[in-house]
Image (tube, rainbow, N blue to C red; front, side, top):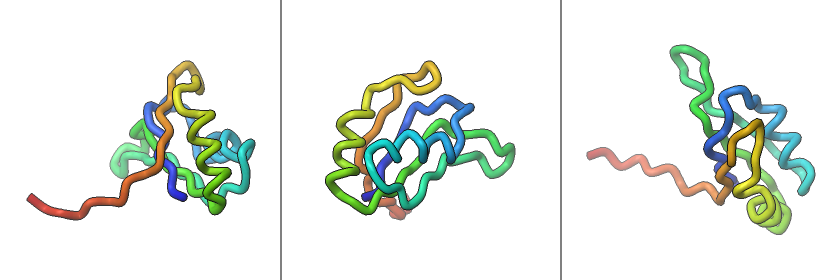
Length: 85
């Protein structure tokens, strides 16, 4: 399951995000999204967990918790919408 993690502190990196979610199970990948021009975090990221039950537990337990002084938003990621206006 692909999990969206929002409202991240700009100091959170991929490894910290992975470590946070590993408490609930196996993490396939974790990625903090960064601006391609200045390399600064955009304040959100994605974690991919293979086990649905573990992913749901992580979402339920981590949503609304505080990480580096910011209350994070954690939910199932929505599919990317490539529609152009």
